[in-house]
Length: 157
Image 1: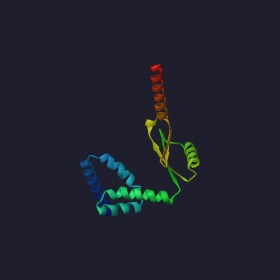
Image 2 (image 1 turned 30 degrees about the vertical axis):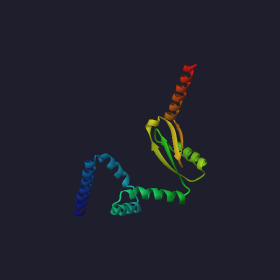
Image 3 (image 1 turned 135 degrees about the horizontal axis):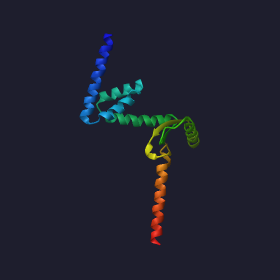
Image 4 (image 1 turned 135 degrees about the vertical axis):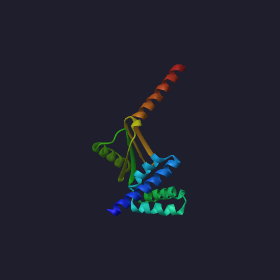
């Protein structure tokens, strides 16, 4: 029982230290989001982050990320495909997207799903620096552009 109470105090102390530091920088909510993601980190990522912290050079984190990204890309034929939809995909749509992505890239696919209600509907697919935008927002922007172009030509005649 004593160990549990001690752990609770330790957790409380760490949480308060984090909150105080975040509040002093005006980013308590942003830090909370980062912390939520950090709990998913693998032991090797946490070990490297701790080693980088000891180096006292914040730029190393982004440099290691870029280098790791290059090494993974060179070593792995899997294509990371980011799919953005207005609402969460169901299993049927997810399977169709995977099939389409596999056809486009002829490789194993690692699917990253994002939800952005601002696209209104449709889908945006991004991979290997390419972007396929079939969102309702993009279609409306295209229609708006054509209408503006047509009215400009029509008004000049």
